[in-house]
Image (cartoon, rainbow, N blue to C red; front, top):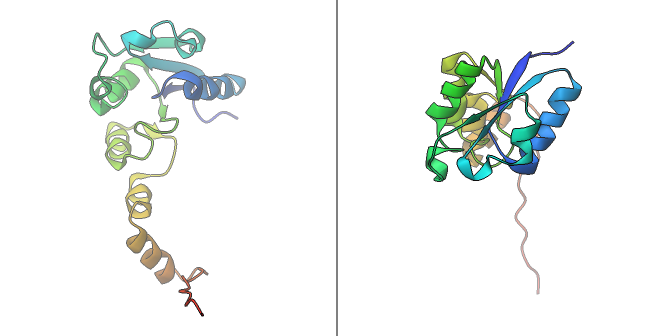
Length: 143
């Protein structure tokens, strides 16, 4: 049973290639995004569909452009977005944008990502959840 019919991979290069291969083995259609610098890249060729961000080579206009990625996901009919790693994979604003657009983010939900990004809050959360945790130990150097 496959979870999705089509996913967008919001990354490039080898990262995107690995996600595309795995998705295709599961019978899931794949959508690649790319900048003009990557138009002949392997992930663009391998994906079932590919959409160019436009002429800009700036990361803020391409692989870090949350609005553009969501727009392409909707246009392509993608049900989910896989971020790969790096770029937007640990950005809770991206996860929230996916959630608001009704697109599944393949990864932790925004609340978990925000919580785990703050060590003090995440430790307090786990401590209050009654789960077992290892408490930090301070060592004193003996002469």
